[in-house]
Image (cartoon, rainbow, N blue to C red; front, top):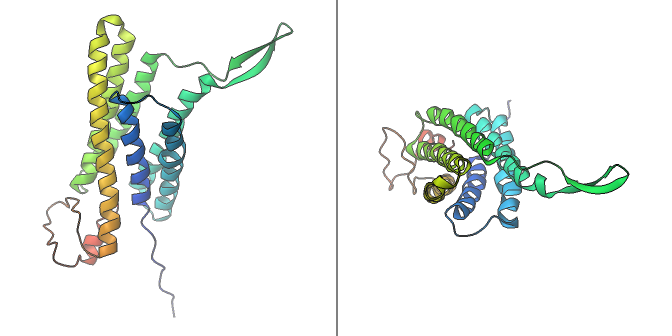
Length: 231
C-alpha cells in the first residue's frame, strides 16, 4: 500500500500579500502623502522581504519555477531597497591619521544611477509579465502595472538628475507613479485574497479572470478550476 501524498498549502497568497501591502504603503509615500519612515522599512524587511522569500522557497518545493523566481526576486528587491536607504545612515568608527572619525557603511547612490536600478527591475518585471500571458487576467494586471511602476519611478529619477528645469515634470511623474503603485499593490492584495477565499469556500466568489472560462458563482468549483488559482 502506498500512502497518499499530503496536500500542500498554497504559498502564493502569502507572497502576494507581502508584496501587495508593502507596495501599497510605499506608494502612498510616492503619491506625496507621507515620508518614508521605520514603518515602510520594517514592512520591506519582513513582510515584503522575508515573507516573499519564504513563499518563494515554498513554491520551489512545489516545483513552480515562475512563482519561485517572482517571490524570491521581489523579496530580495525589498531587502536591497531598505539597505540602499539605510547603509548611508549607519556609521562606524575609523581611525584616520591617529584620529577617530565616523564614516558611513556606503555612500548614497547618485539619483541618476538609482534610476538605472529601478529601470533594470522594470525590465525584469516586463519579462515576468510575458510569462503571465497564459495565466489569468488578474496576475497579468499585477505584473503589467508593476513593470509600468518601475519605469515611471526610473523616469522620475532621471528627471531629478537632469536638473532644476525638470522639477515640475519630476513631481508630476512621481505622483502618477505613486497612484499607479497604489493600484498595483491593491491588485496583488485582491489576487491573494481571491485565492484564499475561493479555496475556503470551494467555489469562485472572487473572480480572477481565468481565460476562456466563464465560472458560475452558484456552482461548486471543479478540481481543475481550483488548480488554476495559484500563481
